[in-house]
Amino acid sequence: MASTTAAAAGNGSGSILPTHTTTAPPFRAHKDADLESTTRRRRRRCLCCCLLVTLVVLLVLAITLLVLFLTVLRVRDPTTRLVSTRLIGLSPRLSFPAMSVQLNVTLLITVAVHNPNPASFTYATGGHTDLTYRGAHVGDAEIDPGRIPSRGDANVTMALTLQADRFAGDLTQLVTDVMGGSVALEASTRIPGRVAILGVFKRHAVAYSDCHFVFGVTEMAVRSQQCSDRTKL
Image (cartoon, rainbow, N blue to C red; front, top):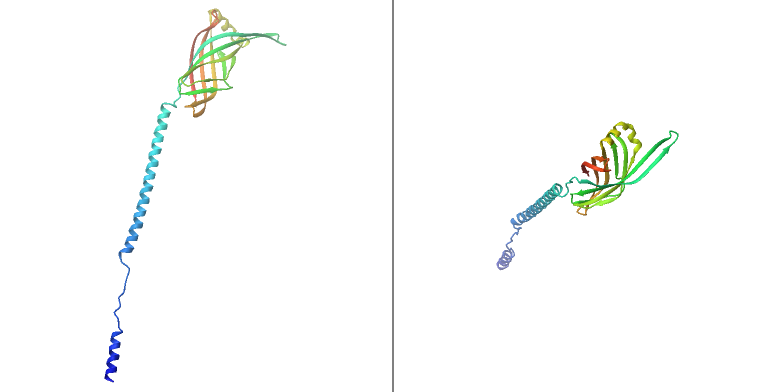
């Protein structure tokens, strides 16, 4: 009886085993948080770099355009010079019922134009010249289509029609000028067209020319001229 109890007691004490509790390491959560923070900092740094590069590129582009505008794209005024004047038509006309005689004189005028710009100028139709004598409109001309090369020269031809009856409004002064050997006239020209800059950029442009010239009666040619030329984009 005593041995059975002792054996039972021995078996009871032998069945109790020590237990151990395992927990996750405390630094693992901190490691994940540091990794996420590092990723955010890298993304922020990349974004700042991209913005900085974009700003630098835009700044360089703006400086380049400014330099081009001040040097290449700046429009310089052309210069014109009258080359020749030739009589090509004389047409008298009798009007009824006033029974007045009208005389139209057609002159072929050639003007040399120098283009100092690095852009060619092409004009089709629409070029026009108005001729005035002491404020009165006495003639006009249509300008033939053409092209003026960049930094080059070209001749512009026009058929100028003078309406002699328009001079009658100041006939006394006209006779005085003719007897004096010279007649002063004013010519205003407008030529719309397109400019091609470096063969890439194309813009609409209008060339203007205001000329004062003296026509010599004896030599039947232009004796002197003074022009003011400009171009507007």
